[in-house]
Length: 260
Image (cartoon, rainbow, N blue to C red; front, top):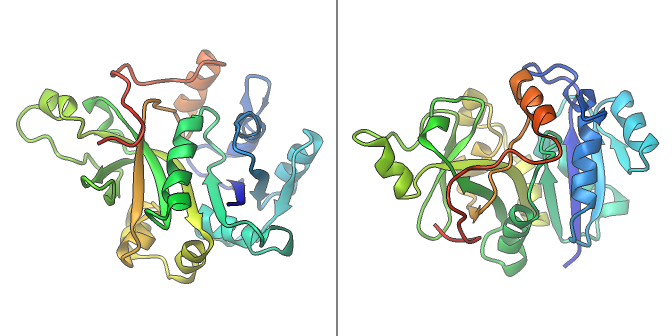
């Protein structure tokens, strides 16, 4: 199947102003993400989707492909869909959304998400990794709960699952899952996703993946061994610069891709 990877890079982030253009080890963040994706052995076409002329210029100056999209998209997936609908990209069967703030995204996470769609297990795939109870009270870190078939039950910035009695028991059972901000879609699922109005849960939590869940679309969650760290805040950016080029990873024992 032919795969297209789109990196949405919106300039108007509020928690980290000018996020795609912020410096990470001497280059704009969006370029570090582009370089990471290009280094993967995916065989996919890669394009940055942005609402900013400045980001467009930065990507093209770095030798990448970029498309200027509308500025009124409510989510990154809507921006990805605009690019996927262009004549140049309509032949691609699987579309992958790797957010423009994930410079440490792991190749096995991308493979896990794409695998769900390529095999026909789910029309939408994403990824997560096991982590410590310390992330539960961090609203900048999105958590996910999945069932035994890998189907996502809910995503939240809130502490899910709530560890009522013993926090260490939840860790040992592998219940705490940090969501990794990538998505793979079949073309049909992507088109359906963006045809839906934003759901109340999506608007409340500011999590776009709650839109398809609210409409009954299933999302497969592949569990990877790498806890890649997205960059949402000034503290995240400082940590990324301090640790570059090594990603910030979980200290939990590695877990095989696809296990829960």
